[in-house]
Image (cartoon, rainbow, N blue to C red):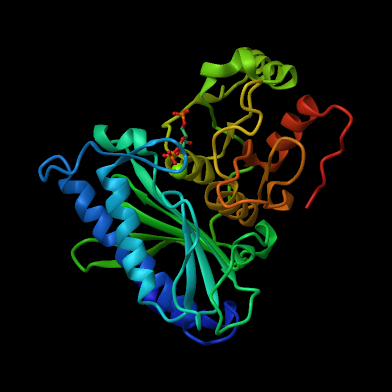
Length: 333
Ligand code: AHM
Ligand code: MG
């Protein structure tokens, strides 16, 4: 049995030398995960379901648990001397914290808000950068807008039948399960690889009529393929990004949330949903894009920027791209 803490001590060199900064940041993330997991399990018993009556920067109603998770992570990271600032889905602006911190963190504190009240898995997503502004001064927006390839760590926490924490620092993807009896995350998924063959596809097709024609043709192709396939692919869609990506990462499957005629940028956020998931999927052997270019290469221009998101096994992504952009050769990594 290897605890998350022991795993991090053994691999400290992976993260910019053995300063202990990454261990401390992950310790705060895992503490937040344990507390949120506890609150979620008691939510309907403790009056924690429902909205608080405010709207966030995204124009969405803030749920009590969104607010609780956001406040919790802000409290935890405000006391972490390695962290210079935070950006959160729930906060309009960046929150500078310790000017002497070397890292900035982007968070979706509780993703999948529409599922909170019905007991369906939700998650936390995180993305970490080394700041580019001088240590000693308050962090600035440009520290958060370095682009997906500049991430130094990223991951998610899934609050499902068990609580799982998956992360990457660019040396593969490693997953841990919370053992509630010990209050520790234990290594259960070392060096995760995404299966090359898809079992599933996952998308919300309520706007299919507004998708680009190439994508509509691709859906038709999937369905036609299923009529003769020995093992047809099944539709699985939870509506919580963490749960959908997690299942497809372990079982093999394509996930997408495209843009539409009315909303060409789609729904999902590039910095704290797209980039971290794209990096995890690439590290596990898959691919991720915005339908035109590798997602990690899409430039970041603002904190709450939205993006179409496509991710899955490399071969399926190549087929998908051949429908979307028949003349564009997708870069092979
Ligand atoms: P949220 O950050 O407000 O919870 O929204 C993001 C969620 C993702 O978890 C999920 O992939 C998507 O929205 C589901 O959207 P839809 O209900 O339109 O299918
Ligand atoms: Mg979200």
